[in-house]
Image (cartoon, rainbow, N blue to C red; front, side, top):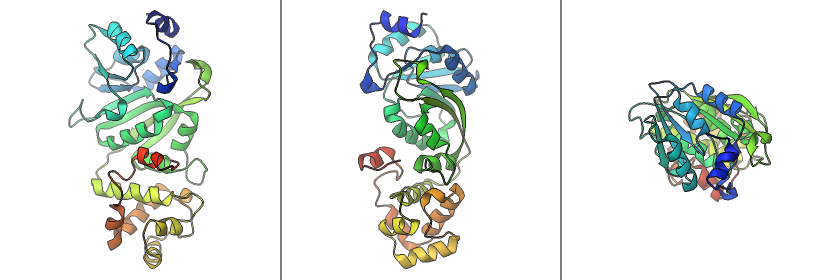
Length: 300
């Protein structure tokens, strides 16, 4: 196979801005991403945005099965030409936001790898969180700004809903900084590769929903206090005062100062109140659905 530019020319493909297409041309970075995923013969890896298949090929050298997700039919043609006869690679033409990550390994776990399209990074991230019980680890490339937020500690300006939700269920390590010069066409932003390893998650679904609802409401207005944000969410002042006393958290603090452990305490404190279930159920569907937050003009 030729280079990225040669293959694009061969298939008459021009990168589409509306799909956020920017192809990684630095093969050293490609190989390092594959190495970080630690593919093994008994494992299934789902690749997000397989593109021309350079990373797919590296993963397939060691993984037992690679499911290559791609939405662009022009690239599907190139992928099929490249992997015809390779039984370890399955090409799936589908929007990643519609893919069921529990399907390939029922009762088991898989890995996820990919260069996440930057214009839909957050919705993809939160969909992956929905399937956290089916995923053991992920190696993903994000726009540097989002990567900074995912790895941010409490008390920083980058710390927010994604920071808390990822830290609740996984450990995050920053592995690679990737400059714009490593892509064609060059994006206007730098990138970073994160390795995300999920912990076992035995909590009931309703507890996870209430935790996520609490985090979202606490961050509703970043400049406001926990007391004000939760009061705006429907809790009475006296109820909140009792909750804050019970869990040992000052209501005058802002959400960005709370650790994951403190958010867990706060969610548990709210759950002990009779109003908590009624109020949290006002949300439609999973309370931490990223696209709904974005649609309402929120910042996550």
